[in-house]
Image (cartoon, one colour):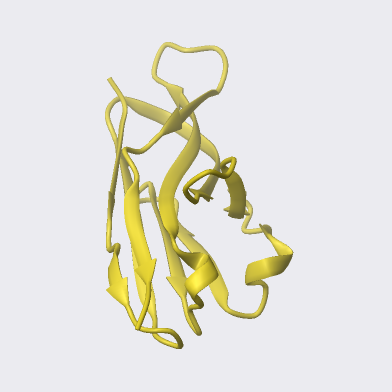
Length: 121
C-alpha cells in the first residue's frame, strides 16, 4: 500500500511564508511526477506546481515567482515553499504523485489527504 503524508499547513498572515512537505511511503519502485494541487471552497481543484524526476518544474501563473517546488528522489519527498502568500492562496493543498509500486507495470496517480492553508490577517 502506498501512502502520501502531507504536513506544514496552517494559518499565516498575508505576505507570510509556509513550507509544505509530502512524503511517499510503501513498496515504491519508482515515482515520476510529484506535485501540489489546491482546492478553494466552491472551486475546482487546480494545479499549483509539479516536478518531474529529472528536475523540470511547472507552475501555475498565479504562483510563479512566489512558490518553489523541490523534491528528494531518494527520500520520495516533495516540498512546496510558499512565500508572499495572499488571501487568494487560501485552500486545501493536496500532494499528488505518479507512483509505480514493486510489481506494477504502470504508474498510478495517488493523492495525499490534504492540508489546509489559510492566509488571513
